[in-house]
Length: 397
Ligand code: NIG
Ligand code: FE
Image (tube, rainbow, N blue to C red):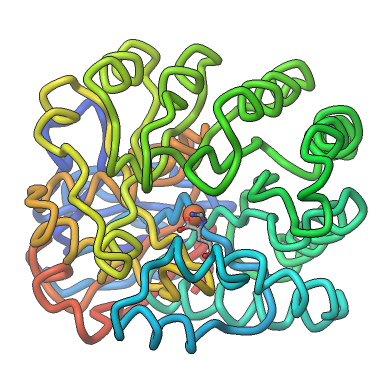
């Protein structure tokens, strides 16, 4: 017996074996035990379903995958937003004691329950916008014990929220109190934090912020090297302000993603293409910090898979909604509508090392969005109001 059939749909499967977005129109999908068991033409679907949903010809897609967020933090930095509106830059504000360092105090002071409650509210907002799989990075404590605590809180959200939560350990910054002994701090990350997080299975990958004002290329090499030795995949915030050569480093380690990439050399792009590393584009942060557009045409021509994410964080992009990022990608970044959709589905899943989410194929998770529109372009086109009609996670509404 089939649990659920969604039929009479403009079904976007994102199946890599089909052309483009893999649209079947009219299509249908069957889910049993939380897993997709059948995908095909409407009318040929299983007839034994306990529940049948008639999508009325509307767009039905995989649940969206947000592959880059910093959803666990306390406090907000709206005053920095106002300062930037008056012409101060992100790096200037950070150098004067704002930025990431300003979020450490409130995050360290918050209890586990408070952090989990705040994060859960953000994740529920993301889910209402169609996100069913979400990556969450640590990175706003920056002590060994505190980062492990953040990762345990993220694991708690994964157990209690009806969403797929993918935890990442982020080496975000040398905290101000360790500025005098950077070397020892990096050693603590490599010899204590990363091995412990790996041993306790608290993170799927390690991310490093390798840029002006954050970690150097040499420090990043040590951090990602330790992650690689601990059996964790690697990724990085690279080239948001300055290209320090970290895209090549990540590609050399068979890394999952190079993120931001407003600044990236031709060699960096070639290295990503060779390694099959995903470029995660974060247009919300790019626009808000008034940064140049990444070299989209070069990434496209080189065959680098491109994902699009929210970068949800208290500094550069306080946004849970992927439709808005799709709008920015198709307008400001001049990506195509198909690229935007693949960027929040299949390519985003690839950036997390996942093959099931982000597609609707037999054997994959039954994470499905029914939209209020019929055309894929409508979602980024009408970015201001949610077009989500219904969200199913593992076949459950
Ligand atoms: O992805 N650039 C580094 N990290 C974040 C910003 C974090 C913050 O400002 O709190 C980003 O943009
Ligand atoms: Fe980020």
